[in-house]
Length: 404
Image (cartoon, rainbow, N blue to C red; front, side, top):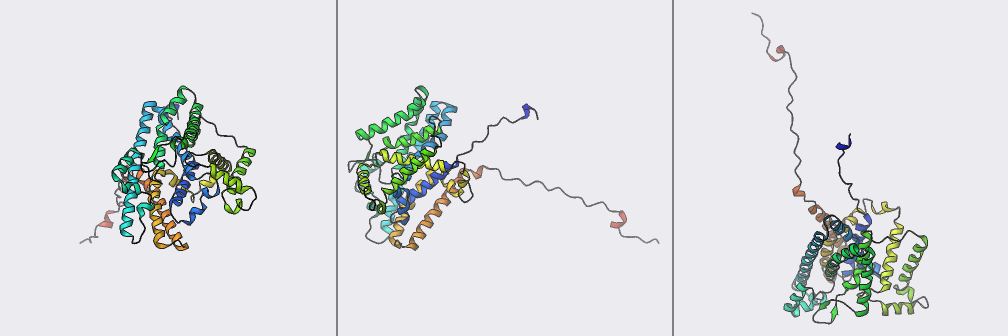
């Protein structure tokens, strides 16, 4: 084969399995943590450390954002890259409006269909929407009214809107200027209390302050864009991270900090100074320690998350937006199911089993739909060639004639 006959095709990009695996885990943890009376919520990472699945989700989303949008900026330039970001923000905005309406409809339907004294409009913390619908609807559209548990997508929209600025900083100043600006914004938001309004009826901001949580996003984004080099695999650093993770367990598990002298005081100080809204330094340090340990453990062991039995979790991570939206509704329905069925072992197995099965089914269903099966040409069966019978002698096919 000559050089002119060699096909000039680019090698296919291999997607890092860790990205989708951990994002898939985050989807299930978020579902469980939002489901009222779910036993599994006692075993989520937040019960054994200073950070939780939300930090993992934002960081991994930043890394995935670098993969998804960074290439557009490199290939097509800043204007088209920014247009691609705008399109994604628009998609997330429509998704946010839809999920608020769906959750509100679920609350109304539950009040009508489920007998009892429970007011699911209050349980789902939608009082402002139904108390002053005109003002609340305007707030929903302008993102100045963000109901509780429905504030992840708005944060993602705000953070994505900062990506074009980050690209300009990296291009005209220095790639590390992006992370420097991100740290400065986080520090200023903590110092001055910057946040966005979350509810006109009460003086609260967004539960996840986007000016603070962006630091996790842009750390992942910078790593994905190769602006920031990850720390090397070092056994001493690994041990330090493990030690901090164990400390996080000790000060969050009551059976430990109440039994060990001095830990209760440390736990009290951490509770007084921890602030999830503004993402305090202890949470950031804990998440990065956890991430480092996870990456270190998986060095030369990626096969552990590439087996067939892990593939469904990876598939869930690939369809994160769809699963997040469905998971919010499932969490509300699951809590209502526990209200009716009780919280015993049988109810726990049934509700969690159904919710998990729905998430897996949605992941595979959305993946199938995205493959556009209707656009694939149907296989055309090969024409069947007629087979002629073998030639036979004339006397074999004609009746014998006796001589007269």
